[in-house]
Length: 247
Ligand code: NAP
Image 1 (cartoon, helix red, strand yellow):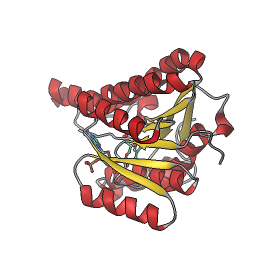
Image 2 (cartoon, protein in one colour):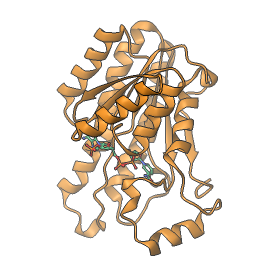
Image 3 (tube, rainbow, N blue to C red):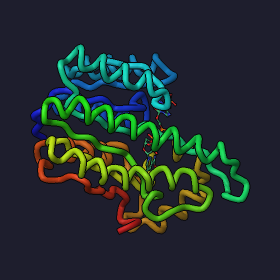
Image 4 (cartoon, protein in one colour):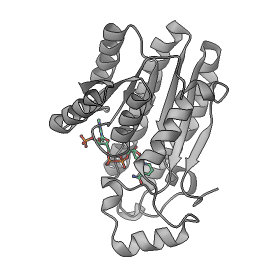
């Protein structure tokens, strides 16, 4: 993969899909800033693994729902490296419940964690990337934002919002050569989906044309493509990585 930029911030990168994105982008030559919120030992171990393999990595602690912390982190990166070339808004949570039982704060909590945080990241990235007239952002949304899912009105609203928001940011960023795209993973093997019962997992797999869940690595390669110079004419796009479950 070919990159004109040199560094990338990945939110929620200490584990799951985010950690795999960090490893793959580091292998491809980018300096990766690994954001973590709660487990410094895991983030440090990932940084050490990347550095031991010959890559460049740094850790940066902040909670994506804390606007001041998020802005400070981006400023720190720009101070250290002179730029922020790429951003991956990956951090996300679920808090599943049937809509009739869902309290309003259980709805807004997921919107804040997934959508408002991505808005802050996109806005701040656009500010710094505009100065260089270069940058690319990938928002990790979800298949659930495209097709809906019972028990996930909060999560689906947050992810559907990320898709629409990416397109609007793409329109605002285009004149400054800053691209915004979204990825909508299907069911991917991580701790987020480890909570599914064997029965639910089997029924999902039965419905997936490729008959299996995806890997974090398969999502990470999609991220790498959208950030890279191979996608310089792609903005406002939604890349589905879902084994054919939703076409
Ligand atoms: P995961 O294993 O649960 O990891 C989530 C990551 O986000 C963790 O590193 C977590 O940090 C971080 N995070 C959560 N809230 C945060 C906050 N407020 N500030 C900073 N970091 C925060 O999830 P995953 O499966 O890798 O999912 C990654 C992204 O892909 C999410 O946006 C998810 O919605 C999306 N996605 C996943 C799937 C799937 O099947 N797995 C499918 C579609 C979309 P802590 O360790 O501190 O909690």
